[in-house]
Image 1: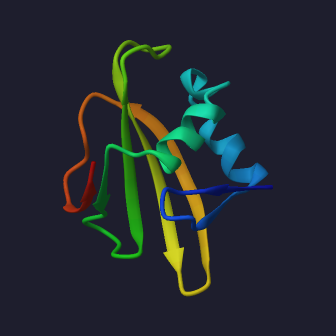
Image 2: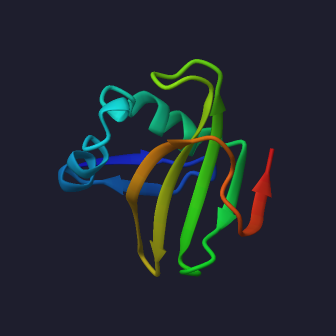
Length: 102
């Protein structure tokens, strides 16, 4: 397990189990540094439409294994804990209430 830090200095856990889940998407293998970068310097953060404790961190990368894409890192925040649920590349930012924009 690793603890990553977001742009507000909050520790966010990335467990081995969640990283294995992320790696089920072959294009995500070796993209750990981009997950860290997305948390530490996001372009925007959106509140999930389905779960108010889930925030979607977005960052655009011009060069990815699957062409120019946004990386979305999905983080669940509890009272005294935060952890990554998943991360994936997508063509556009996900919809929801925008919590923050660069």
